[in-house]
Image (cartoon, rainbow, N blue to C red):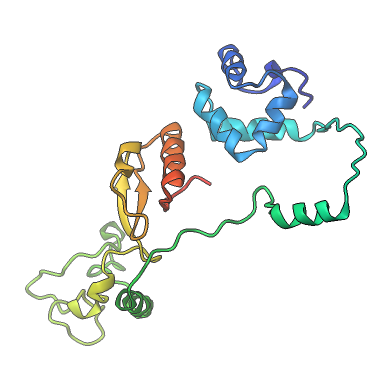
Length: 233
């Protein structure tokens, strides 16, 4: 697909062109550069009405075939060797899209040991299924305690499925914690990030939150150094 003007893009409305101009995008080449920059993609989704991640992906596919050219004038750079060495020492080059390590919680030795024990216990914990789940498909596999007066499973006879028991629980120190060790806090807006301790707590964005509000929450969490457990990207 050949894209010569902004109107050739699939799903682009007339009102979106004015919204693009407000964020400094007036041509196809400028939009192409913005779509392949993560920070600019969030800005595009936030400011364009009716445009989400799927529409942006369609625009990327349409613009992939276009040849991206950049005009760089030939400039002769003459510097002394000492100046070059000083600049190389001071400047740290970070590639765009490079992997950035996720934030880790500050755990006590007791909590770290409890998390390790919980992982071992969870690996050997059986799957608890309700009585006669294999006989009637309508029952499903979700756990229900057997209550019949003649139930052999309730009487814990041999060769019967295991029942939920307190002995299968994990350590109390790690109970309710995310596998990373963070305490999960559910948020639905930017104001929910206030009062979060980034050293011990991480946030999970509610499932009913829309794309633009999710982007705002993720940007604010990045500023505060808070880890988001269910980021979009």
